[in-house]
Image 1 (cartoon, one colour):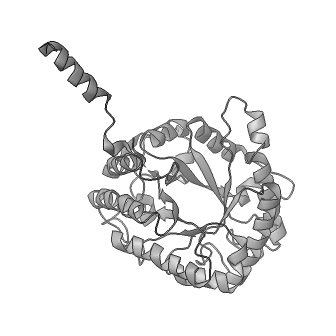
Image 2 (image 1 turned 90 degrees about the vertical axis):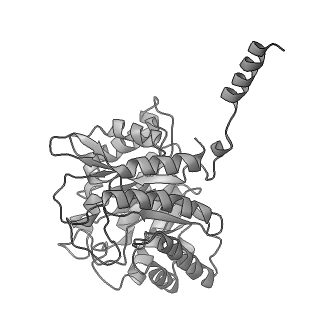
Image 3 (image 1 turned 45 degrees about the vertical axis):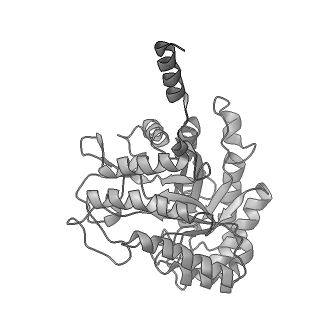
Length: 358
């Protein structure tokens, strides 16, 4: 073989080879993103942002579905915002898991509180039935949008952080929450027997509160557990998942998967008051923790049956808030409507794409 032909052959082999690092270490959809308030504001091109998410390694979304906005009165239902979110996500190949939360005035047990438990769990069950019929298999939304490849919603999360008074105003929560969970489970399974019922994400001493749900009779009424492991150390994120897994084993429920519904560190150090369970860091520290946390959870994915991990969240509001959560985004909305990426986005992209083998 001539020298020129040998060189050409070597180049062809080199350029055509698939590196070993291109093998996916996690299943499709494992790396997810929370999308909330700022992303839905008028200056934001949500479709373009979802395009960036998909390119940067996001494969699934956790989005709030506020019952009080979906059904402001008993006889009026408004799906417009959720239609927009589901449609934009489907166009980008992103699967959606809604968290159905927030009680309309007409349905509240405690009149002045948006996070009051519903007076009648059957009302909450009814909105879930409507949602499954709209976005689930054969749903009305997909029939109305034949231009979209149907990415039917098969995961439904029942409420958010009911162990906190801010999300479930009447404490203790477990018995009343399990009553709601039972009604939700029956409604979802009746509308789509193959759907997965996801337990509300639990923060703080999540493994203790998960035990309360089991003792209140919750074991039968969910398919996937969920945890929000807010802590200052990456190693403690894994430890919190382990503790929840231990609780599930004690109640003979170890076969069920668990998802990390909110993984995050705020970059608001120096701007917000430190709070227990959600410690802030710098923008550089936020990026470093992301680079460590996603691989750390991937390493124990099989051992602890971790179904998905959702970063909290994609987009932060402009600087100036005193709320630590408002510094959690990988990107930040500026006062003039432009959006800038934080160092955390590059760290997320690198970690996610490596795990996905792309």
